[in-house]
Image (cartoon, rainbow, N blue to C red; front, side, top):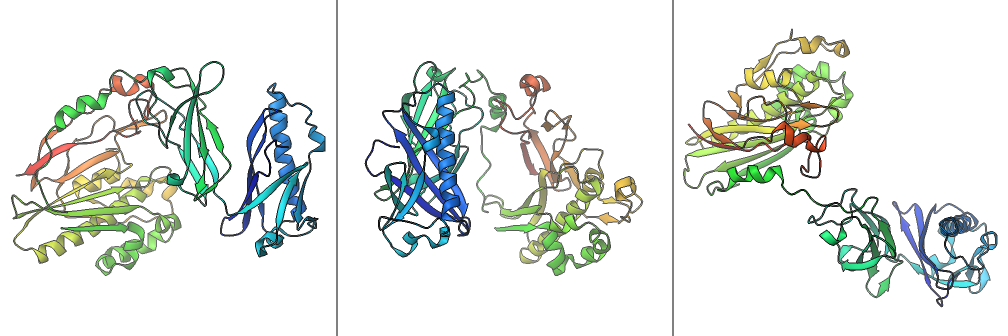
Length: 458
């Protein structure tokens, strides 16, 4: 099925050595066929099963080309056949993939029709490659998904093409490409040729689903940059912590009282103890004002459909751990003045019990959040903390603006008795955010808006 003499077919063991990946370039210049074929089978499958998958893959490729009006010459789809040979003798159809002779060094090849394919074991292959859904002039792009076996980005060759009318034309090479105004209205194609030393694997191509678009003339975040021309004064990153809230709650002796309080209720919520929600903390000491120490923490609480009380429990664990860090720093550096900031995506609106806990320092066991219908098995718990927090941005109308939800979910909580807000970088106007219906969009890379504040000591 190919005009080239003895092309290669690549066999690779993948997925914890349980599967066999077979890939090769199926090509014929006279019939204008040049396409990548790959199949996967369990190592416990028979050779006959694997060969049938190869034949089906080729047949589908040929039919696709025929349906698209391609020139197939005298290709007879019904007569496509594949067979393994070892020392020029046919391999039994019942032989398992894990027992094929090439694993023990025997001379073996694959024949597709009359063409012989040399077998290369664990050769470089591209398992999956996909381009981004949206491509805009001036913004570098690279594969959105890129999965390989027995190769890496540095050993691969990348070729970029564009097509507006007629055939694809080569426009660049390398892992990334920055579209130009000449690409507007064009479809892009990326060809990857994987390598491993001197061995080159079968080339794989992917085509963009949409044409390249002209970029916006102005980006809202550029206006916000006016407020961030000057960096913060030099400082030094003293300690850092990273924990998973649910795990730390159960194993940290410093949180034993909180665990005792929560345990009877959270054990009714298995997903709470399995949640991977984390907390990161950095302890900073100013080089200019060495008597001052700032502890900055960041988290991202669970989103819907979890109820508010779920996030209140998570926030309480974060606050308790943060309090233990403040206590440790106070003992290590008793001369320091310590202030705390806790920020992040709390997935909680200003009318939630989470926001109430953060700014009012407590929620009681009779709070309405405990008695919501979905919480009928949960008993109320008194949750509290000692931080005198305020919200740097207050409660803006939105920090999240999607098709399904518009509201304030993100906060910078600062210790009001030690820190004051010099300025905040204004949020974009709603007209800017909804210009492209919602975010993320071509001008906003996230569905959340960045909160930026200048904070100083009182």
